[in-house]
Length: 315
Image 1 (cartoon, rainbow, N blue to C red):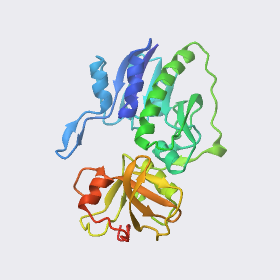
Image 2 (cartoon, rainbow, N blue to C red):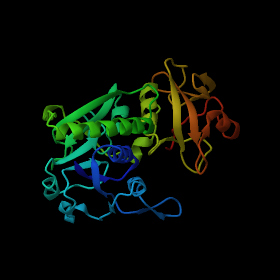
Image 3 (tube, rainbow, N blue to C red):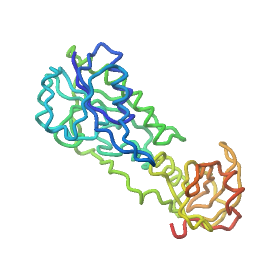
Image 4 (cartoon, rainbow, N blue to C red):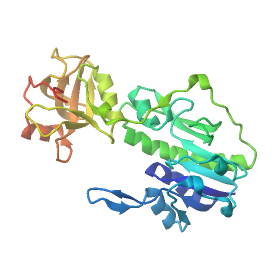
Protein backbone atom coordinates (compact mmCIF):
# COMPACT_ATOMS: atom_id res chain seq x y z
CA UNK A 1 0.00 0.00 0.00
CA UNK A 2 1.33 3.43 -1.02
CA UNK A 3 0.30 6.40 1.10
CA UNK A 4 0.69 10.15 0.93
CA UNK A 5 0.77 11.79 4.34
CA UNK A 6 -0.65 15.19 5.30
CA UNK A 7 0.39 16.50 8.72
CA UNK A 8 2.07 19.41 10.45
CA UNK A 9 2.03 19.56 14.25
CA UNK A 10 3.49 17.38 17.00
CA UNK A 11 0.22 15.43 17.15
CA UNK A 12 0.92 14.06 13.65
CA UNK A 13 4.49 12.90 14.30
CA UNK A 14 3.69 9.54 16.01
CA UNK A 15 1.35 8.62 13.15
CA UNK A 16 3.98 9.38 10.52
CA UNK A 17 6.60 7.42 12.46
CA UNK A 18 4.20 4.48 12.83
CA UNK A 19 3.62 4.49 9.07
CA UNK A 20 7.37 4.55 8.43
CA UNK A 21 7.77 1.53 10.72
CA UNK A 22 4.86 -0.36 9.12
CA UNK A 23 4.45 -2.27 5.83
CA UNK A 24 2.85 0.87 4.36
CA UNK A 25 5.08 2.74 1.88
CA UNK A 26 5.01 6.51 2.45
CA UNK A 27 5.41 8.01 -1.02
CA UNK A 28 5.42 11.68 0.04
CA UNK A 29 4.80 13.94 3.01
CA UNK A 30 2.85 17.18 2.71
CA UNK A 31 3.23 19.68 5.53
CA UNK A 32 2.79 23.41 6.13
CA UNK A 33 5.54 25.85 5.08
CA UNK A 34 8.21 26.86 7.60
CA UNK A 35 6.95 29.72 9.80
CA UNK A 36 8.60 32.34 12.03
CA UNK A 37 8.56 31.25 15.68
CA UNK A 38 9.97 32.25 19.05
CA UNK A 39 11.15 35.63 20.27
CA UNK A 40 13.61 35.95 17.43
CA UNK A 41 10.91 35.03 14.87
CA UNK A 42 13.35 32.61 13.30
CA UNK A 43 12.00 30.55 10.40
CA UNK A 44 11.14 27.17 11.93
CA UNK A 45 10.14 23.93 10.18
CA UNK A 46 7.02 22.10 11.38
CA UNK A 47 7.63 18.99 13.54
CA UNK A 48 6.42 16.65 10.79
CA UNK A 49 9.07 17.96 8.40
CA UNK A 50 11.89 17.03 10.75
CA UNK A 51 10.47 13.53 11.20
CA UNK A 52 10.03 13.05 7.46
CA UNK A 53 13.52 14.23 6.57
CA UNK A 54 15.05 11.96 9.19
CA UNK A 55 13.21 9.05 7.58
CA UNK A 56 14.45 10.07 4.12
CA UNK A 57 10.98 10.88 2.78
CA UNK A 58 10.22 13.50 0.13
CA UNK A 59 8.68 16.60 1.75
CA UNK A 60 6.42 19.12 0.02
CA UNK A 61 5.28 22.36 1.67
CA UNK A 62 2.72 24.08 -0.59
CA UNK A 63 1.28 27.34 0.68
CA UNK A 64 -2.11 26.17 -0.62
CA UNK A 65 -2.79 22.45 -0.94
CA UNK A 66 -5.92 23.00 -3.06
CA UNK A 67 -3.86 23.59 -6.22
CA UNK A 68 -1.55 20.60 -5.64
CA UNK A 69 -1.64 17.40 -7.73
CA UNK A 70 -0.84 14.22 -5.80
CA UNK A 71 -1.55 11.80 -8.66
CA UNK A 72 2.15 11.61 -9.56
CA UNK A 73 2.79 9.71 -6.33
CA UNK A 74 0.27 6.98 -7.30
CA UNK A 75 -1.20 6.78 -3.78
CA UNK A 76 -3.52 3.99 -2.72
CA UNK A 77 -4.57 6.03 0.31
CA UNK A 78 -4.08 9.45 1.88
CA UNK A 79 -3.46 9.80 5.62
CA UNK A 80 -4.26 13.08 7.38
CA UNK A 81 -3.30 14.06 10.94
CA UNK A 82 -3.37 17.67 12.19
CA UNK A 83 -2.47 19.09 8.79
CA UNK A 84 -4.07 22.52 9.10
CA UNK A 85 -5.44 23.03 5.60
CA UNK A 86 -8.73 22.04 3.96
CA UNK A 87 -8.31 19.32 1.36
CA UNK A 88 -10.19 19.86 -1.90
CA UNK A 89 -12.78 17.52 -3.42
CA UNK A 90 -10.31 16.93 -6.25
CA UNK A 91 -7.73 15.54 -3.82
CA UNK A 92 -10.30 13.28 -2.15
CA UNK A 93 -10.88 11.39 -5.36
CA UNK A 94 -7.25 10.58 -6.21
CA UNK A 95 -6.32 7.66 -3.88
CA UNK A 96 -8.31 4.50 -4.66
CA UNK A 97 -9.01 3.97 -0.95
CA UNK A 98 -9.71 7.63 -0.25
CA UNK A 99 -8.30 9.92 2.45
CA UNK A 100 -8.43 8.97 6.14
CA UNK A 101 -8.11 11.45 8.98
CA UNK A 102 -7.07 10.86 12.59
CA UNK A 103 -9.34 12.96 14.83
CA UNK A 104 -8.75 13.27 18.61
CA UNK A 105 -12.31 12.82 19.87
CA UNK A 106 -15.10 10.25 19.96
CA UNK A 107 -17.07 11.50 16.98
CA UNK A 108 -19.65 12.87 16.51
CA UNK A 109 -18.82 14.54 19.83
CA UNK A 110 -16.37 17.42 19.44
CA UNK A 111 -15.97 18.03 15.76
CA UNK A 112 -13.78 21.05 15.10
CA UNK A 113 -10.64 22.84 16.17
CA UNK A 114 -10.19 22.11 19.89
CA UNK A 115 -11.64 18.68 20.72
CA UNK A 116 -9.09 17.77 23.40
CA UNK A 117 -9.51 21.01 25.30
CA UNK A 118 -13.31 21.04 25.05
CA UNK A 119 -13.59 17.51 26.41
CA UNK A 120 -11.61 18.59 29.49
CA UNK A 121 -13.39 21.90 29.94
CA UNK A 122 -16.81 20.24 29.82
CA UNK A 123 -15.89 17.51 32.28
CA UNK A 124 -16.17 14.52 29.91
CA UNK A 125 -15.32 11.20 31.54
CA UNK A 126 -13.57 9.91 28.43
CA UNK A 127 -12.17 10.95 25.09
CA UNK A 128 -10.48 9.01 22.32
CA UNK A 129 -9.49 8.91 18.67
CA UNK A 130 -11.40 8.16 15.49
CA UNK A 131 -10.10 7.17 12.08
CA UNK A 132 -12.59 8.75 9.71
CA UNK A 133 -13.03 9.38 6.03
CA UNK A 134 -12.22 12.92 4.97
CA UNK A 135 -15.43 14.54 3.72
CA UNK A 136 -16.16 18.00 2.31
CA UNK A 137 -18.01 18.91 5.52
CA UNK A 138 -16.01 19.52 8.71
CA UNK A 139 -15.17 16.21 10.46
CA UNK A 140 -18.37 14.67 9.10
CA UNK A 141 -17.02 11.57 7.35
CA UNK A 142 -17.85 7.98 8.24
CA UNK A 143 -15.86 6.44 11.11
CA UNK A 144 -13.76 3.37 10.30
CA UNK A 145 -12.31 2.79 13.78
CA UNK A 146 -12.41 4.33 17.24
CA UNK A 147 -10.49 3.90 20.49
CA UNK A 148 -11.58 5.40 23.79
CA UNK A 149 -9.41 6.72 26.62
CA UNK A 150 -10.50 7.64 30.16
CA UNK A 151 -9.73 11.23 31.17
CA UNK A 152 -7.70 11.17 34.35
CA UNK A 153 -8.47 13.45 37.27
CA UNK A 154 -5.17 15.29 36.82
CA UNK A 155 -4.85 15.17 33.02
CA UNK A 156 -4.04 18.42 31.23
CA UNK A 157 -4.72 19.11 27.57
CA UNK A 158 -1.01 18.64 26.95
CA UNK A 159 -0.98 15.22 28.62
CA UNK A 160 -4.10 14.08 26.76
CA UNK A 161 -2.63 15.36 23.48
CA UNK A 162 0.38 13.08 23.88
CA UNK A 163 -1.68 10.06 24.95
CA UNK A 164 -4.09 10.43 22.05
CA UNK A 165 -1.30 10.98 19.53
CA UNK A 166 0.28 7.67 20.57
CA UNK A 167 -3.06 5.85 20.69
CA UNK A 168 -4.06 7.16 17.29
CA UNK A 169 -0.81 6.26 15.58
CA UNK A 170 -1.23 2.55 16.20
CA UNK A 171 -4.91 2.68 15.36
CA UNK A 172 -4.27 4.39 12.02
CA UNK A 173 -1.82 1.70 10.88
CA UNK A 174 -4.14 -1.10 12.02
CA UNK A 175 -7.05 0.51 10.16
CA UNK A 176 -5.06 0.92 6.94
CA UNK A 177 -4.03 -2.74 6.93
CA UNK A 178 -7.59 -3.85 7.68
CA UNK A 179 -8.94 -1.58 4.94
CA UNK A 180 -6.58 -3.09 2.39
CA UNK A 181 -7.90 -6.54 3.34
CA UNK A 182 -11.53 -5.48 3.16
CA UNK A 183 -12.04 -5.96 6.90
CA UNK A 184 -13.34 -2.50 7.84
CA UNK A 185 -16.97 -1.61 8.52
CA UNK A 186 -17.73 2.09 8.10
CA UNK A 187 -20.07 3.78 10.58
CA UNK A 188 -21.89 6.96 9.50
CA UNK A 189 -21.97 9.63 12.20
CA UNK A 190 -25.23 10.37 13.97
CA UNK A 191 -25.90 14.01 13.09
CA UNK A 192 -28.33 14.33 16.01
CA UNK A 193 -25.43 13.84 18.45
CA UNK A 194 -22.96 16.32 16.91
CA UNK A 195 -21.21 18.83 19.17
CA UNK A 196 -18.62 21.37 18.00
CA UNK A 197 -15.27 22.14 19.60
CA UNK A 198 -14.89 25.83 18.88
CA UNK A 199 -11.41 27.34 18.62
CA UNK A 200 -10.05 28.51 21.96
CA UNK A 201 -10.07 32.23 22.66
CA UNK A 202 -7.67 34.00 25.03
CA UNK A 203 -10.65 35.49 26.88
CA UNK A 204 -11.55 31.99 28.06
CA UNK A 205 -8.37 31.93 30.16
CA UNK A 206 -9.62 34.44 32.76
CA UNK A 207 -10.57 32.66 35.99
CA UNK A 208 -13.92 33.60 37.48
CA UNK A 209 -13.51 32.78 41.17
CA UNK A 210 -17.28 32.71 41.64
CA UNK A 211 -17.34 29.36 39.82
CA UNK A 212 -16.94 26.06 41.71
CA UNK A 213 -13.40 24.86 42.41
CA UNK A 214 -14.00 21.75 40.28
CA UNK A 215 -14.88 23.91 37.28
CA UNK A 216 -11.85 26.16 37.78
CA UNK A 217 -9.61 23.10 38.06
CA UNK A 218 -10.90 21.83 34.70
CA UNK A 219 -10.32 25.26 33.19
CA UNK A 220 -6.72 25.31 34.41
CA UNK A 221 -6.05 21.80 33.13
CA UNK A 222 -7.94 22.30 29.88
CA UNK A 223 -5.99 25.47 28.98
CA UNK A 224 -2.57 24.00 29.80
CA UNK A 225 -0.33 24.43 27.80
CA UNK A 226 -2.27 27.11 25.86
CA UNK A 227 -3.50 29.76 26.43
CA UNK A 228 -3.02 29.07 30.19
CA UNK A 229 -5.48 30.25 32.85
CA UNK A 230 -4.88 33.76 34.26
CA UNK A 231 -6.02 35.94 37.12
CA UNK A 232 -5.29 39.47 38.31
CA UNK A 233 -3.11 39.53 41.47
CA UNK A 234 -3.05 42.51 43.86
CA UNK A 235 0.11 44.65 43.74
CA UNK A 236 1.32 43.04 40.49
CA UNK A 237 0.39 45.83 38.06
CA UNK A 238 2.33 44.55 35.06
CA UNK A 239 -0.37 42.06 34.13
CA UNK A 240 -2.22 38.94 35.26
CA UNK A 241 -0.41 35.89 36.59
CA UNK A 242 -0.72 32.57 34.82
CA UNK A 243 -1.98 29.56 36.77
CA UNK A 244 -0.48 26.33 35.47
CA UNK A 245 -1.55 23.81 38.08
CA UNK A 246 -3.96 23.64 41.01
CA UNK A 247 -5.77 21.21 43.29
CA UNK A 248 -9.50 21.40 44.11
CA UNK A 249 -10.34 21.03 47.81
CA UNK A 250 -13.79 19.47 48.34
CA UNK A 251 -14.65 21.78 51.20
CA UNK A 252 -14.95 25.53 51.64
CA UNK A 253 -13.07 27.67 54.13
CA UNK A 254 -15.76 30.32 54.41
CA UNK A 255 -13.94 33.00 52.44
CA UNK A 256 -15.37 35.19 49.71
CA UNK A 257 -14.89 34.01 46.12
CA UNK A 258 -11.33 34.89 45.10
CA UNK A 259 -10.07 35.46 48.65
CA UNK A 260 -6.60 34.15 49.50
CA UNK A 261 -6.86 32.02 52.64
CA UNK A 262 -3.11 31.44 53.10
CA UNK A 263 -0.70 28.59 52.38
CA UNK A 264 -2.05 25.03 52.52
CA UNK A 265 -0.94 21.48 51.83
CA UNK A 266 -2.34 19.35 49.04
CA UNK A 267 -1.56 15.81 47.79
CA UNK A 268 0.76 17.45 45.24
CA UNK A 269 2.57 19.76 47.66
CA UNK A 270 2.21 23.14 49.30
CA UNK A 271 0.19 25.83 47.59
CA UNK A 272 -1.86 28.98 47.98
CA UNK A 273 -5.43 28.27 49.08
CA UNK A 274 -8.13 30.41 47.46
CA UNK A 275 -11.85 30.42 48.19
CA UNK A 276 -14.17 29.93 45.21
CA UNK A 277 -17.91 29.95 44.60
CA UNK A 278 -18.08 26.35 45.83
CA UNK A 279 -15.23 24.75 47.82
CA UNK A 280 -11.60 25.95 47.64
CA UNK A 281 -8.72 25.70 45.18
CA UNK A 282 -5.03 25.31 46.04
CA UNK A 283 -2.78 26.99 43.46
CA UNK A 284 0.35 24.86 42.98
CA UNK A 285 2.22 26.34 40.01
CA UNK A 286 2.12 29.98 38.99
CA UNK A 287 3.91 32.33 36.58
CA UNK A 288 4.29 36.07 37.27
CA UNK A 289 4.43 38.42 34.25
CA UNK A 290 7.79 38.25 32.50
CA UNK A 291 9.07 35.40 34.70
CA UNK A 292 9.31 31.64 34.45
CA UNK A 293 6.67 29.50 36.08
CA UNK A 294 7.41 28.46 39.66
CA UNK A 295 5.88 26.47 42.48
CA UNK A 296 3.49 28.39 44.69
CA UNK A 297 5.80 28.23 47.71
CA UNK A 298 8.54 30.09 45.85
CA UNK A 299 5.99 32.60 44.55
CA UNK A 300 4.71 33.26 48.09
CA UNK A 301 8.22 34.17 49.27
CA UNK A 302 8.50 36.99 46.72
CA UNK A 303 4.97 38.22 46.08
CA UNK A 304 2.00 39.28 48.23
CA UNK A 305 0.07 36.22 49.44
CA UNK A 306 -1.31 37.24 52.84
CA UNK A 307 -4.78 36.02 53.78
CA UNK A 308 -7.47 38.46 52.74
CA UNK A 309 -6.06 39.33 49.29
CA UNK A 310 -8.76 39.31 46.63
CA UNK A 311 -7.83 37.74 43.31
CA UNK A 312 -9.40 38.48 39.98
CA UNK A 313 -10.18 42.16 40.41
CA UNK A 314 -9.26 43.99 37.20
CA UNK A 315 -8.48 40.79 35.23
